[in-house]
Structures are given as C-alpha cells and as structure tokens.
Length: 111
Length: 113
Image (cartoon, rainbow over all chains, first blue to last red; front, side, top):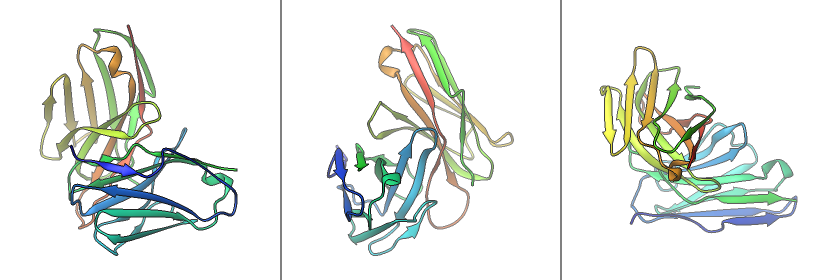
C-alpha cells in the first residue's frame, strides 16, 4: 500500500527552537506539499516541491523553510518556533494532475 | 485565490439517509477532488472529476460537476456511522505546469446510528 509517513504524530517544542518536520513517501511521486490546518481556516499551503531541490512558496511561507535533497523526502523547518505556529501539519505527495496522498499529520504545540 | 467553499458547514443525518454536500469555486479548473478526514487524521482522497466530465461514481459516492456554475456536489448514498468525518473539496488549477490543490474549509458530516 502506498504511503506518506510523517515522523511524529505529536510534538511539543519551546518558543525559539528550530523544529524539523520530516515527511517520506514511497511512491516515487514528483510533487510534495506541506499544509497547515487550523480550526476555521481550513488547509493552507506552506510550501511545495515539484522536483528534487526545487521548491516554491505557497500561501503562508513566512517563518518556514523546506528542504528536498532526495525525491522521497520533504522536510519542513520552523527556523524559530513561535506560539502562532501551533497547528496540525499535513504532508502530501502526488503525481502530476492526480489525487494527493496525505500523511497522518503532526500536531505541533509550541509553548 | 480559487479556493473551493463547501456548503453546508455541518450536516447531521440518520444512518441510511443520503448526504449531499456542495462546493463552489471561483476560477477555471483542471479538475476537482473530494477528500475525507476523520478526526485528527490526515485526508483521504475519495474521487477526482476532470473539467470535461459531468458526473462520476465510486461505490456509494456520486460526484457532479457543473463548470458553467463553478460548482460540484458530493452525494453519499445509504450513509453509515463510519461515514462521520469532514469532507473537503479541492480544486486543481487550469493551465500551468505546476500543480497544487486549493482546499475549502470542509463540511462536517455526522451520521447518527
């Protein structure tokens, strides 16, 4: 069964820490995405990547960066975590013009 | 933004009834997709309908697309308690070489046993 794996289900970090969220897919998909999901705001795209070492900003990239050194791995980095980055983070991958496969999500709390 | 918007925001029905959710969007699309999310989990892809299609079926799911009205509907027939979840529509952009979906805020469906 095809899979997108996010390294942590729950994470608690302190304000100012550098945080890495890891996502790995085993489907050889070109596209990978990071979204955050907040009550009342739905899913908002942070960054996406359509090839190795390629990245593009989504709708809310401020305070985040990404890394895609290998096709199967897409990392989201919070350079200096803040309380307003407390959220559910969802990683997804896809082939071009196809449905997304999502990971189970990482619920991040910044205290 | 060509964000889809689902309607209603919440829907409560009895097991065995049909559930209909609607989605409206603003600009041209390549395709429209529906996803389900169980509480606290990731989204699961349900069905994709392309802009040149009008109706599509998958098991108990039926999706329609009206590009002239920029709207879609998702019908779940003979609902079950296990269908309780949030349902999202997502639109894929028309044109362009990159591909990213824009999601609506979802419809929370509760199916009462």
